[in-house]
Length: 434
Image 1 (tube, helix red, strand yellow):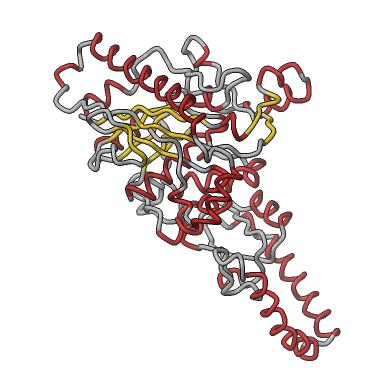
Image 2: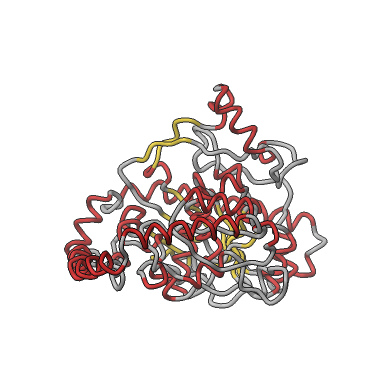
């Protein structure tokens, strides 16, 4: 109760507010001790034990989804998730018994991420999707001032005349738009791209994510749920040709990483290297639907982390090798059957050391119009040339950013922090001149 009405945004005064609330609650605690004597408390505890035994004997009969809360206990939550059918557990660290009265808890977000809001018995990622609300956006951990300061995202785009400008002015205001680029380590760069589109263009950029995000195993849920919930809230869709077609046919904005898991879980020495398939998977569909294709490059992972144990290292260490094999049992390899490196997509958790934060940079290239090119669908040479042009543009954007970031006076976190203290705006931290 002492946390009620304390806003995370007011971090400078929240501590004093908490102390004040605790002081006001002290008389209430002393009154409660007189109202509830020891014998009464003992009797009530026995009553609770009896009721718990009765309920536990009938848990198997519960098949409906229930939105409920109980005393904060990780072990109890895990126990119930194994016994109850269709059970989704969400943990709220730092909250008490009156969770709906406390700050930092958004019931709407929980309903959305657990897929309880839907029009039919089965959840549809398109029909049942609700865009992120302003409250969800502002209270997202990814919008915390310290996170944005550490990442320091600098975004550039290319106008129709080829001029590079700061911001997203070069992005078309009407869909369908297919944004295609390179993945960095762990794929966290996708959050920055999607949030920049929301922040500046007020557009939901639907990332095409690995299906495993929507199929979390029970033993992994307490580790993965915070990540997957953020992905769902921001509008991610399981990657598949059908889902890409549905997105573009609705004039939506789609974010595609052709390199997929192989690129985001790359090995040592492979930073900024593209692992794209040989086939023109997405180009034909974009041309068929007249989508605007925007190639982009992203750099910055080497400024924020250093990869120390990659997949090749793990295969040489028996303990890690066993864990990787166990983790991939029964999981989906989207590139299975393809030749080359793109087919090597074992899911694992690369181990890295954080660095003194540098900065993320994104450059969106000149939009490639495909509207009116439907008659070229059967021209294999045209589709191949367009595919290679997109890939080449992504590589050029990466090289451009790697060179230009050397001229950025605010590449380091210390410089950005000093600028923030003097000017006070995370949205306007300068970068290099394009």
